[in-house]
Image (cartoon, rainbow, N blue to C red; front, side, top):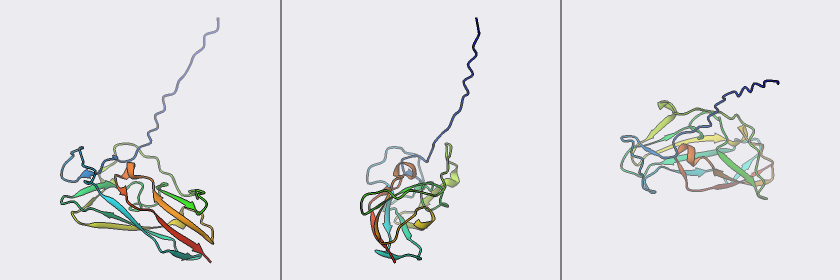
Amino acid sequence: MLKLKFIIPAVLIVFAGCSPKVQNASSNSSSKNQGDSLYLIFGIKDIIKTGEKVSLKFAVHNDQSTEKSFCKWHTPFEPLMSKYLDIKDENGNEVPYKGPMAKRIMPPPADSYLVVKPKEILSSEVDLLKAYQLEAEKKYTVSYNSSGISGIKATNIVTFRYTN
């Protein structure tokens, strides 16, 4: 009788992000009220001509009276390393992401978090052309898809026309 040996390699791939909860910078309480978090507001020009940067402003607001922190992974507060935006054209077709995709393990190191002081706004910009192939003479809608990773709640979507 032939003896079969099964070798089962143990491969652990951890697709990890930061905690989905926004953390209070001065405590680790996990019971947060819905209104007790950071929120995101996008900004972009209505009409952008080809050849110009397609700069999306990403502003994180802390309206609370205590410091809050969020994971900068999947935000423009770090170099472009993941698909954290959904961009669709006027027909609802998703624009393919062509940028880098980082895989990370838990727990995120301390330097992965940014602190937002009470009543403060942190902002950053990302050029959408660095990771998305936009076509001229189309209207696009942009939304944030990584609230569960960064802990930032998106409050709006933006639209713009990319034209000659």
